[in-house]
Length: 209
Image (cartoon, rainbow, N blue to C red; front, side, top):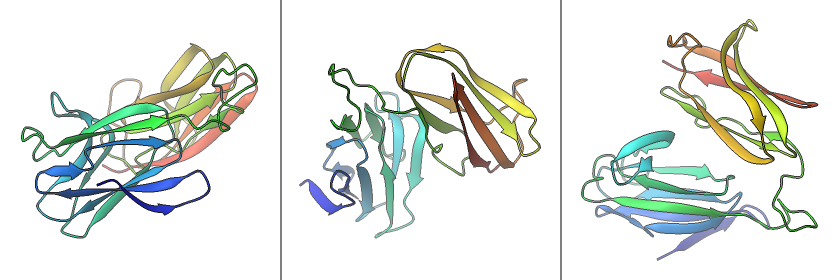
C-alpha cells in the first residue's frame, strides 16, 4: 500500500516505503521533483542501494544499511529520472524497486512549453560526507561552456570534472574521490566550483576515508 507520510510544503511530500519480508512495499514509486522517499525497516536485515537491479551493481547515488528494526533512511529527489534500487543483501531474491521522478510544472517551464531551469543552480553533492563516490547535480539556464572543478581546502586544483560545452537543462557528474592523476584524495574538506558563462557557484563537501 502506498503511504503518503506528510507534506513538506504545498508541492513537496514525503513518501513511505516499508522494508520487510524480502520486499519493498510499495515496490515502485512515481513522485514529483522535490519529493522525499523515506524507507522504514520493519523486519530483517536489509539495505536500500541505488543501481542496476539486473546486475546488483551499486552506482553510488545512495546506499544505506539499516541498523535494526525501526531504523529509517530518507532522501530527496530533485532530478527528473528513474532510479532503480535494490537490497544489496538480497538483490538476487529479488528484492528490488524503482523511483520515477516527474517534472513539476511551474518549477521548470517557459512560455514555449519547453522545460528549462529558470536560473542556473549548483546542488549540494550527495551523499555528503562520502567515501566511494558522490553525485553532483547542476542546472543550466542556457547552452553554456561548463567548467566544474574540485579544489582542496588550500585552493589547489584536485580534479577537473567537466570542461565542455553543454546544453541547457539538468546535468550531473560523479566524483569518485580521486585526483587528476588517479590517486585517491585524502580525507578532508573539498570545494567544487561551477563556472557556466557568467554564473560562478561553489559548494563544500567532505571526503571520509
